[in-house]
Length: 112
Image (cartoon, rainbow, N blue to C red; front, side, top):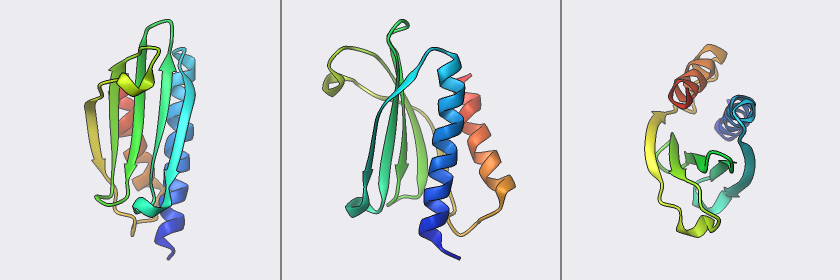
């Protein structure tokens, strides 16, 4: 098993699922970064300018969890204060599709 590929695939599936849900609610994916040097950590930011709200999904490669955060949206993204919504641990040794679906659904439930 390739743990790195499992993480990459899960992150992509998570991003696509959240993107589909948030696009229907008026959000757009505005930023994504990948930091290989930081244990493969990455994050994605979705913004709804009409509602002045944003979500950020982080894959924390060091601690092996997904973190969903939210914030009021302001024009300067460097001044956004993020609040945790949920933290979902991920065992990268598990390649079961049902396990991935369960993780994604737990995040999507928090988005509403």
